[in-house]
Amino acid sequence: MNKLVQLGSDVAKLWAGNYGAYLNGMWKTISLAVICTLVGCLIGFLCGILQTIPCAKTDNIVKRFFIGLLRVVIRIYVEVFRGTPMILQAVFIFYGLPYFSDNALRFNSVWIAAFTVVSINTGAYMAESVRGGILSIDPGQTEGAKAIGMTHFQTMLYVILPQALRNIMPQIGNNFIINLKDTAVMFIIGFTEFFAVHKAVVGRTFMYFPSATIEMAGYLLMTLVSSFLLRWWERKMDGSDSFDLATKDTLAHTSGMVRFNRGRKNRAEARLIKNGELAEARRKAGVSDIMNLGLDQNERGR
Amino acid sequence: MNDSILEISHLGKSFGDNVVLRDIDFSVRTGDVTSIIGASGSGKSTLLRCTNLLETPSSGQILYHGRDISSKGFSIPAYRAKVGMVFQSFNLFANLSVLENCMIGQRKVLHRDRVTAEKTAKEYLDKVGMAPYINAKPHQISGGQKQRVAIARALAMEPEALLFDEPTSALDPQMVGEVLDVIKTLVSEGLTMIVVTHEMAFARDVSNRIVFMKDGIIWEEGGPDQIFGNPEKQETKEFLSRFFDR
Image (cartoon, rainbow over all chains, first blue to last red; front, side):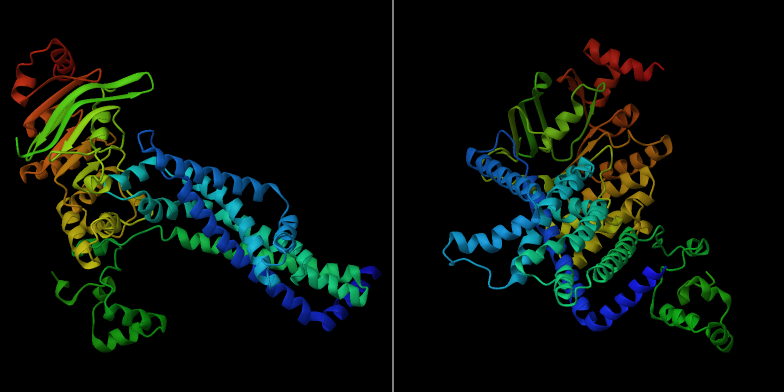
């Protein structure tokens, strides 16, 4: 128990002295994770579109060659970047480029280097997730789109990928949370994200364990909030379970379909309901309860 | 025959060693309503899918207004926009509402502006009796309703001909009725169509030409009176007797 109290006071002391550095580190970690997950998704979707370009035996040889080449290149990209540690990829890109090009090619900023490495790495994982997402969509959807004359690109963009996106949302969330934590390895190229702050603070204060405690709590906080937001976003994507009948048939409205005539009047009413003033306003205007059904003036009483 | 839209000659299709279509000759003229009948596995659907190039034919030729559709520079997407298709399993876009389903092709393929596309979509949805459901998503409506939306989606492209691939096979009897009524309306308006169907009474009543297929071959073709009343081939008689002697 004494130990816990001790830890608590150490953590408090450390936080009071360095909270700026910690918060700055968290900010950089979050930006890196958010941007790289988004860019990684874009790479993944691009790979998904390119990988699924249809190729029949009857197509001409040049087209078949390029499609085949494209598939091989994507395959190599995925296998290499999924199959090697991100920490080494960072080293290779940040130190390897100037080494091989005699300093002609190099990253001037660790930010750009870190963003590049994490994005490309995430892209490799996302390429496979997107491929899985595309496979999960009924082939009938593609046929339906082809049958009204859509090209492969249009079919993917407007029909398949929106559905695939919904199906792989849990995996995108996974990748995002992994990125939040795994960007820690970017300290190797001197990117001062959340974990690098820990190393810096410990170097100055020698309070290793209290600092690690702050890190733990910080990472957990970031991932929990992300999980919550991702779930909320998924629910939002699913949309409403019900729909409004678009009809002028007044009987339909009495069955609960009351939101069709969403005119200015109804919005004004909605505001009134919100403020609890509707009943009051109604009484003043002498309007009957049929207003409730949201009917047009001329439909009432028909 | 200047008014023929499609001319299919010597069409063959095989999946590996499995020969599904052999030497099919077949043509479609403007205003024709052709029903293709035959047992399951006789190649009816494959013929329809080859016509729309959803399957690539193994051999033979398809002429669209006299142009070979496999020739260089022939735009297959543009061809498909002109020869619409309605599927057994509807294939409505699950991510789009009923209205958007009928608009997306007009917007992206025909490059119509939003107002025109919406007006056209609503017009055809009204025709198939689905106007009230424009805000619904496909999973929220019944099978018969889905098929009617699918028909409206195909019609909104204002095609020259429409291919129906067993449009009522996934529906219960009541829904079959509502979909067939829609198709009958289209027939009365003179739309050119090819219908693969197991609804024999429907085929007899609405089409002006019946094609009977068996084992990947067009066994017999002719007017409904001939095929249903006085078929020449023994196979046709046998097939039809199962439907009418029940």
